Length: 245
Image: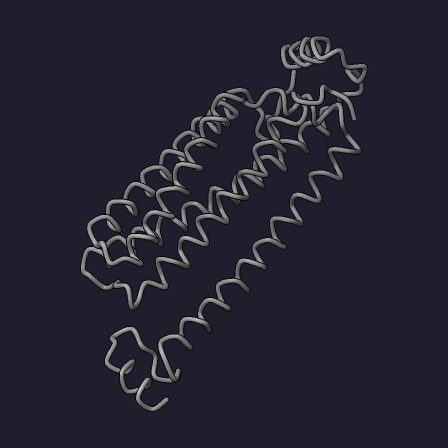
């Protein structure tokens, strides 16, 4: 054990209150998973609130959901799945000591993340223009109701009545809260990846020490998975099953 400690002590990333690099890695891995569990509980609470209100105010939530841009939402889903792939390749590059590929895949992941945020900003701007942002200027007029009735009729729904302005506003409140928190997590992730790319270029990471890249990968995959649940919940369910409760 003393020999292992002495060998690890020469590594610049080694913290001296651990016995070995492996022990340090196991401790930090446990901490990362505990952090992710708190994140799962946080987003799980928001998902639960959304599903409860969707069940109570089904017609109003369906009317709000049908105004979301399915094409942009689907495009962003493809972008995030692509970013998960590049992040996994970045972790593999770190593990195998391929510095240039590590930097390239990190930068590509950042680019895809920024693309997602750019598309989300376009969606948000549309909602501001349509006055679908909850608040004093919120509107959900006859045009939106006509569109909802057309969609409901096309889907042969019997639930085309009972749309209430306050309930639709609640849908958009949850939409902005859930997608906004997801976007905030992506901004944090891009910041972390930027620091990792800078350090990777300086040769900080090696096959012996690449834990920060691995943990950033876990975080990024978690954020991607959250969107994989958000997309069908907000954009697809109403269109897929028809406007039925």
